[in-house]
Length: 221
View 1 (tube, rainbow, N blue to C red):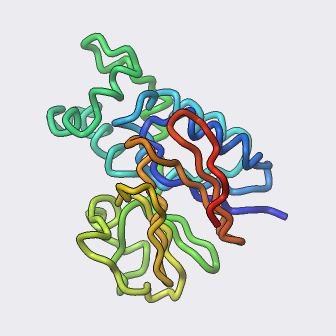
View 2: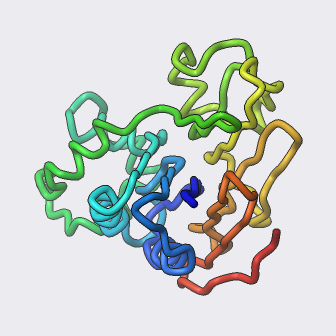
């Protein structure tokens, strides 16, 4: 039976990502949805994007665009000065590429991957966005600012007009815990801050978690 598994914000934590993939053992019939923010803050942003490119060849991967990829793309395409991005984890990202003053250290395959990242994913029962949503608007009409930047601690949205349950990232829980209400679950559990990378199977609610060092946590659900 095929599964749909959503990963929270990875933020360069490749060891945790690999550990969860090893534990989950995704098959070609499965769909892996990553909720955005693959880069910045953690130690191996380059390695995470390389791993996503590998997964694309093996199964159905839906890598959503996070606000950190949005910033990185804007800097690489010279649409934004680098300082804001560098202050939000971009320094660690460029170090993972061996940056020596030339932005061309980021391969075209990584730029192309970020350019084709969608803003949302939905099934018959759930939808996934990086950050937040307007409860009264269809997913295809959502403002980009809401989808990628607004934390649920700023605005906790009402149930969506679709009746589907939301799965989001972006708002990290500083205790490393999943935040859950009946219509929404946030699975950004602060991996880069020393807690957990979380993955959740939509069909069953099963949870997997791993530490930044790649140690699997006992199932919490």
